Image (cartoon, rainbow, N blue to C red; front, side, top):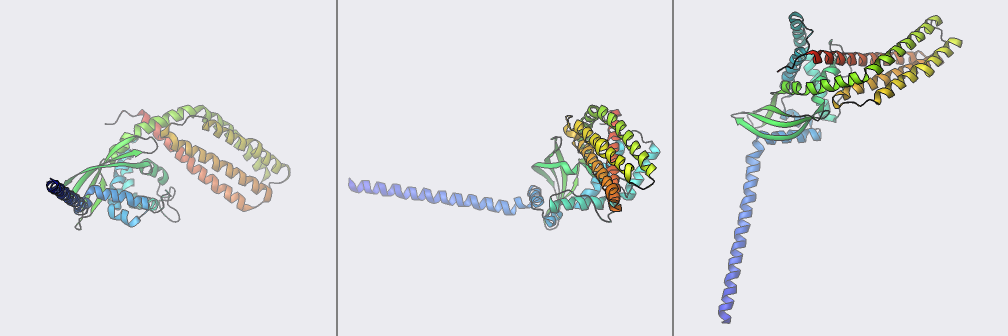
Length: 365
């Protein structure tokens, strides 16, 4: 009996050991299969290329991003889509003037594409959006177009990746849907990317196929938010524009009487006017604007108004220092700040004009 019991236990142990060996072999085969699939299949897919691209952006790896995106081709096509969209929404354009604008956009395209490339790759490298500086032709309005406003209308700064969907591959080309979201309005969208496979098997993004549809989808929400914000702040802006215009006229009248010599009673009058009336009025206007609820799509316009107020106050402050010290550098600084304020105000005017035109248009299919 004891011998049979021993043999039974021995047989069961051998069976367990056999099952354990099979389990280990199965797990090894599974891991090996996953490894082979990952390195010889998945790493050669468009989806993997896009995940690598997202990681490269997070690491600020410029070289990896340039490998994953044909930057010039993507920007060139996006520029065409954006300028077409801009002309499409301007109902005030005649057929002749529209053709002239199309020619204008074609003429400045190389410089604009280069400017966009500089800004985008600067963002990849630093994680910060910075406008062109120095001698760049896209700085300010040198090309006859407000580059900052153009960049804002591209919506690129607020585009956020949510998820990469499965790719549809045909030969050496692929279409991939990616879920994106506009950070400002939180509006979701399925962006369709076109990718191409190089001779080395590496996939690269070459186009945003439905970028114009993205612009058209986002525009109504933003336009409505901006329209609501403009309406909510209309009376405040009108009231304080009148007050500030009167105060600036009084300042100019006193300053003209000084004939360039700000001293004595004239200096005191100008200082009191700025410190006791102009600057407090600017601050009061901004406080009332800040008290108005800002729809998400109007945040950019609200921020521009705040920036304009800050620049105006800073300019007046330097004027006062110039009056007090007689230093030309203070007057020069004030003039520079006023030019920056004027640029912001022109941008604000453009947004309001564009919104007015957009609200008057019928829905564009």
